[in-house]
Length: 85
Image 1 (cartoon, rainbow, N blue to C red):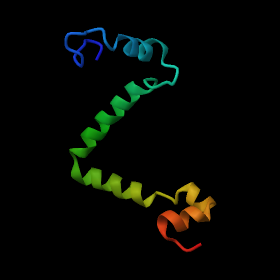
Image 2 (cartoon, rainbow, N blue to C red):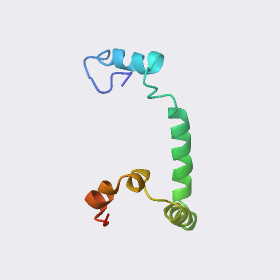
Image 3 (cartoon, helix red, strand yellow):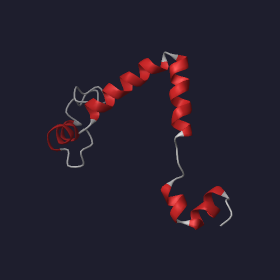
């Protein structure tokens, strides 16, 4: 985007957006981007090992609890999940 790849003929079209994200970023949209990329690379490597991937997926699913909103609002349980109140 910064190079103008998405706006042929107008290389500076998104300059304001790019500069805002890189130099101001009031909503911290890029604050943890480097950590995200590093973690995604780790996930990509793990996915190449099917047994390890399956182990992680099963443990993740088994370790999940109920959504906190579901525990605190019985209407959500009935409306969304069809669980009697």
